[in-house]
Length: 279
Length: 185
Ligand code: SF4
Picture (cartoon, rainbow over the protein chains, first blue to last red):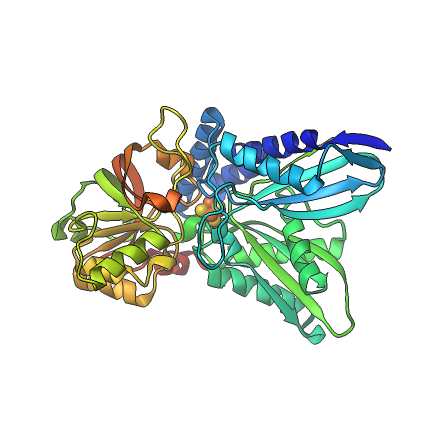
């Protein structure tokens, strides 16, 4: 058994949320560059230039790239040979969120669903825990903004609708979402499992880097086809019209019940923020 | 499409009538912030026949809930929020003379109609470009509803604040026209 102190976890979560919000991945910067080069619309090229400049300023000033610094989604892979000491594991994560959002000057967006009163410290974190082999803890921080999240859907298809039904549903969802989720989007897709499992798969898909294909060649083909269909919609960056409406589509697939075909489409904006670290 | 235009608030009917969808506009002067909760309070005041905390005539409202300001800065990251949540309130404010709204995302047909009727425009700021946009905000001061935190109404002094015309005063819509132009379906 390897011992890990809860305050190490807190520190790591704090740092991950500040870093992910202020310092976007190089895969996205490369995608913006591609947009500047290849988008057929001059207005779209301008938007990509703004996005690039925005990332540069955020890195330089260490300020969040978007004011919506999200709800704090945390994926944890906890090694089964780790013994957590010094306090409560969930509290440690929430304390990390509290500190990160305060110290990083990040916006606190968590509120009571009815009174809409702001909780004040952006807790609770949305924690997805998986127990894995080994004696390490891997934590992935995903600040998730509201605009794109609101465009997401879970849909229970009938099995006969099959892969074509899945593709149509995703493309229509993005068409209907139009300019709302700050395109160019990234689309996380969960297929299979149950009602709740498929949604978690879709969220988890967003942890991939732009260009990272599903290892199954058939699924990878479907990802590419849906991406190209979304890009034919003409929505363009910010919805101003253009040939880059989506940067990538990621499918995560698991077995489901013989009677069901669960599908989740988790829409993500161009500000696809996620960072991970391991203790 | 795609002229570059500078405008200073407050805006007149003539200022907004010359704008076309796709025009890039740089705003100067004073604009006000407001999102869901603040809009509800403003329209409640109007319905009760009470005075608003600021005069909306000729003004532009920016749908934004900024991130907290770091020491020495007027404001934190300040990109637009999705506008459709303000659709229920926008026509009332246009009736009172509001000339512009800044946000992102589609508006309801009633809102586009109200823009035609009252001569107002809907301007898009680049969603997610919060750090860049904050650079053009020189001063920020809370004028109402401090209890709403990021949703409080702020008066912003802006210089060359970059926006794109999405709906003009003739009912045109950049989202519709843009997608039509580049669609390959
Ligand atoms: S959708 Fe994304 S980029 Fe747009 S405002 Fe929300 S978090 Fe920011």
